[in-house]
Length: 225
Image 1 (tube, rainbow, N blue to C red):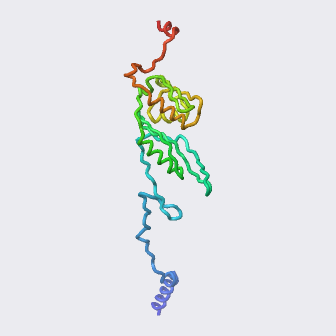
Image 2 (image 1 turned 60 degrees about the vertical axis):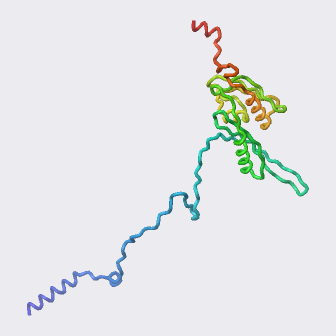
Image 3 (image 1 turned 180 degrees about the vertical axis):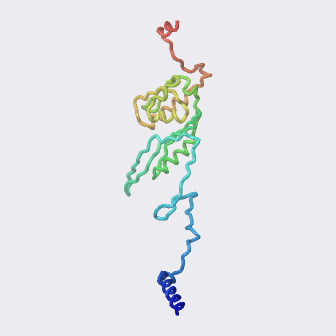
């Protein structure tokens, strides 16, 4: 009798110490971590925006020519049916090594007119004689009422010129020059006058003129002596 009572009390103590397991927790399936991740977005060639549409990146290829747009004008032609609008672009193109060209083209859109002018200017490039990054001698170019004075300059002077003349000097490769425009500021006439002067330049070997040098005054001679 004593042994049966002892065994009953030990079984009751063990059942009291045991923690009951909820039925829902016991029956819930064990979830495993996902093994596959979301596919990575492609990074080569284009990128995606918030809307999901890919935006392609345009690669800019450097050009071997110096291309400058001097002026863009709006042209309005009045006809019987109404007004017809177009745009003209004046462009200067050069390689920076003595070749330069310009062109004036028009189209219904600005981008198209610039593209046409660039193609035409590259076809009509001419060679300009350059002596040590400047011109060989002084000259005056004319076109209509416009006249442009071109003078050689010392190294380090830079391009002292207005917009249209500076565009031609940068395109042809002249780095030191003194210029002055007279009577007209029309970009078309100024560029034509500048090209008129540059095309009539003579080579330094033909003229026998060396690069301009600094003139020593009497004070500098006395100081050196």
